[in-house]
Length: 275
Image (cartoon, rainbow, N blue to C red):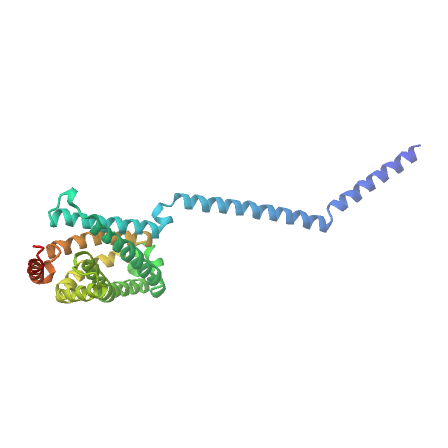
């Protein structure tokens, strides 16, 4: 009997040993390792996703939507600048404001300043001057040591001051002004008359432009992209005010042509019997 019990005990121990051996086999261990690795990877991915979501949530609206933000600033700024000119320069009361004229400026601010300038100074500049985005994130001390970034920043300033503003912005601005204040609905006349007035004022305009936009560009092109364009639009508000004040109204840059046009119109009305 004792022998039989001992034999049964040995068989039970052997069975447990086999079971233990099967659990600890290399294949089982490999499966356990894979399960553990997959679980760790899933947990890490979940943590990274949570961190990314939290980082995006902490960003400001301007950082999350740089184009939309600066587009709103450009449109509102241009509208406000025109209303200021009508009230301060043209001496209109609030109930006399020409909102049709203001709507044209809104379109110019939306399409050119908010749309075209963003495409040029963000999309194209990022390709033409590849260090811009990295340079903008550096501290002032690091910027000074970054030769490549400083070189690209100076190139952007030069392109804006000597190519964009004198050859694209000013002709567009004067053409838009002709759309608002001109006496014709012919687009060719808008462009011709606008460019003619620009050519008559080119020395004064370009000198004032270099004085303002040269230093301003040095600041703008060292800023993070999501605030560089809103900064430009804020400077542009004062630039628009400056141009309006120095021109003194719609016909001030005609070099006497405004008075002559008024006399011509008066004569035409007299002949037609409408005056």
